[in-house]
Length: 213
Image 1 (tube, rainbow, N blue to C red):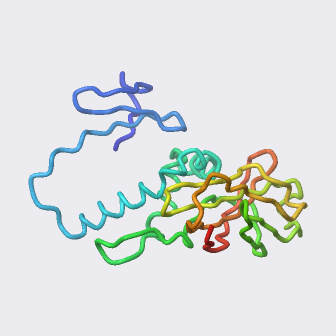
Image 2: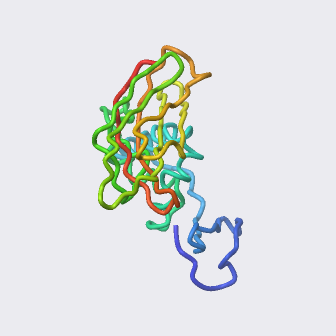
Image 3: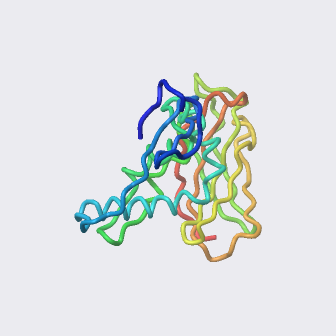
């Protein structure tokens, strides 16, 4: 990938002579040449990288819209779109297992990332209709009582995610995530985080554990 800083292709999106041009969120123009067909057998390290890429791409599929909130701010800071920012911040530290049995360790995933203080005292419990969340209502010095809670239930086996990006205020101390329509008997990875009322700051998410839905 290369950044185009001058010439007729600045601001252009499309493919010319095998080179694809596209725009980054910050307005810069990128150029990428189509990969050539492989003519030699891949090395072991290449196979691991390719496997990890597929594994994490599958993990990310249910999170396409969620990343707009969870990594919108981090993406702007890194000069990436939200999806790529989440991949960059999580993939290296979350892949586990010996090749070829590679998988994502959900406990190491940051569903949201930012500078807003989150909470270290939160709990989740599964009910007949969803997940009940509670958290410490004490407001950190650099946070605000109007911060809204973000709730996430991720289902690795189903490749589904149920979430709320604009829940109750930090000062309320409890909220509920409805899981109606999600297949029963599935494992859910549960997360909580907070976003400021004006959406200019967001916290790192906290993994609350693995639950049987």
